[in-house]
Length: 402
Image 1 (cartoon, rainbow, N blue to C red):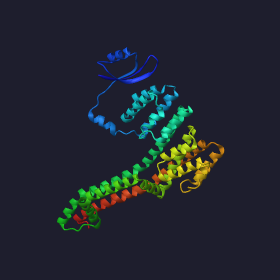
Image 2: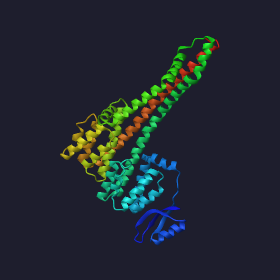
Image 3: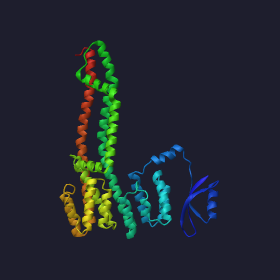
Image 4: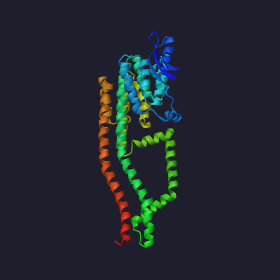
């Protein structure tokens, strides 16, 4: 039997590892012989091969990272040693991918590596922004406060992401339902009616012909359409991965009517929140701009922020540089930055700006939902009505109704 253990040495140092023994008592006895006092002992459960494979498919979600950061913040604030904190979180974390990373980070920290350096080895989970915040806390001696800021920031970003996803669920469900009903009628109901009507010699109504022809077309060319669609999506994804492609698509995103204005507010809220959090954590403004540029998520904003960072290094103000990009930074945003620079409280002002934009985003999402709901109801009604008419009219003809 194998056991995962956590134990303390005579000097109080925390150690963690795996030991093989015939029973729990034997494992404790073996560890005691090595002057290790067991604080946690769990039997290692052998998982089936498929479960081990699934571990690699189980990604660390934003929610997992939010919970990890909040727990890390609370335990660190409680003056629990960092290695012991990580070991405890390892035993409590359910996500197998994150759990594995926490174990490796714990081992690195125990070996003398800084927490920020250990995090930086896993960029798919811990972004440059995340690592910069932790590093800032380590350098300033305010890691507890930086972790609190980071946890609050991740929670606000998670809420924003969930709100946007929630706004998209309803219209996508309605669209999927309408498409499924159209396919069902085209493939199963109308072909049977078509055969019966042809036997009776009755002429098919125009709308019924259209739906049947649609079904016949999909049956004949559906595979080709799917291949073309998959090919176009693949080409678009590959194009977006190129430097030019990302630049073009990001620029289009912020110029699309309705969606463009919402996208701009999302990026501005993210930028304000990022800068506020990094500056509050003690990071120099130029470094904060560089980190924010790498995490903003839009190439147009990234280039503008990097240009601003260079201007700041030359002695210019942030607001001065932002004013050269009015299509990205509206006057209100720039004016609030000026206020922050004049008062010396740019972190506080940017926090207020972020909160303002997040409220505007929530309001716009609700407005968008209020517009989409009746539009989707009308769309679904027309779709169902059209399908119903295409089925009912032939039935009436068969019964001599027309």
